[in-house]
Amino acid sequence: MIPVSQPSLNKEDIESLNNGIKGGWISSTSPSVKEFEKKWKDLNNQGDWLAVSNGTSAIELALRAHGITNEKTVIVPDITFAATINAVLNVGARPIICPVNKDLLICPNKLNQIINKQKVDAIIPVSLYNKDPDFNVLKSIRDKNITVICDWAESNPLSENAYKYWSMFTVTYSLFANKFITTGEGGLVGFSSKEVFERAKSIRDHGMDSSKRYWHIMQGMNCRMTGIQAILGISQLERLKSFIQKRVEISEFYFEHLTNVKGIKYDKPNDVSNPPWINNIFLDDNYEEVDRDNLMKKLLENGIETRPIFYPLHQMECYKNYKFNLNYNNSYKSLRGISLPTFCDISKEQIKYICKQISFCL
Image 1 (tube, helix red, strand yellow):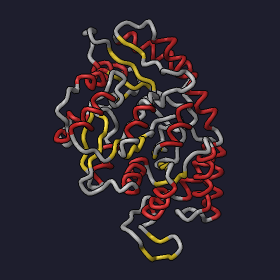
Image 2 (cartoon, rainbow, N blue to C red; image 1 turned 90 degrees about the horizontal axis):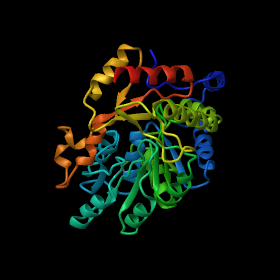
Image 3 (cartoon, rainbow, N blue to C red; image 1 turned 120 degrees about the vertical axis):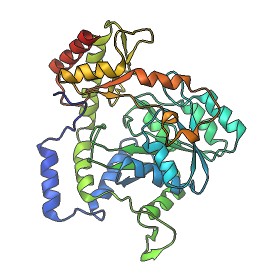
Image 4 (cartoon, helix red, strand yellow; image 1 turned 180 degrees about the horizontal axis):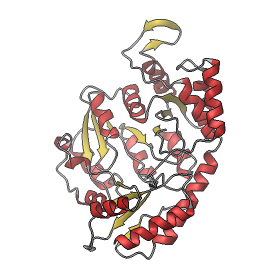
């Protein structure tokens, strides 16, 4: 079976973890947590960063630090992993699901229509499958005193866009096992505002005063990263550039072997130097020989695990009440999308086999 994803762990990662365990520095008080935060900041030398327990808590912490709670209104895109909207609900805010454009990114026109019709306190744009929302659009929204928290869970931290977004907005990352680097679970939040960063730092630690232990200055939460996670993250960062280069090669190889396959379109990155965390194909609109789910089933029967593109949030019973009175037609492109195996240790022979089986199954 070729898995859709798996982490790349080497002997250095394992040795680092073993040494950390032997040294006893395994909780959130471990010096490795601060070291990991510093090394992450050094990637682009922008923002102040906090390491947290997972990507969902990263968004939730960012919202709380900006005061986006208690019935505040937050716009989220229709195509995203549910963590984005769940974090909004978790802090007591009210989400509004915004339609997407043809790239499945939050649609600027629809976004402005919502903003013009009602008060909006925050927006969470999502970087999706290596495509980033328009920077200038987000900047103009921020200039309207609307908080912008970028959900960059899937994004390449060394992309050309990363520097700009880190310097201007609050940005969250996921360090789940299928991302560019991993700490198993884990996440990061970067703040361009020092004031918001200091507030988030206290919230992350139960709302405790940093200078007076067990004295709480605000309601907080515990979403701290452990020392074990941070040790793995530090080790993984040593190979970040090689991980990205490997994903560039994977993306190029998929493109080479899928370009002329009938019935599908390979979702080519806008910038080949900025590879996606996972590679996708879309069934053509007018192709009726096989539907998406049957194609995935056939590939699984041939030893290839795949996953569907994220479903539209507005279609799900638990979120449908957060729709706006707008057209969501672009979202249905996701129902024709399939995510293909993408991980650093996948071989060219495996990719050739995957592409061959896709062609046979169509």
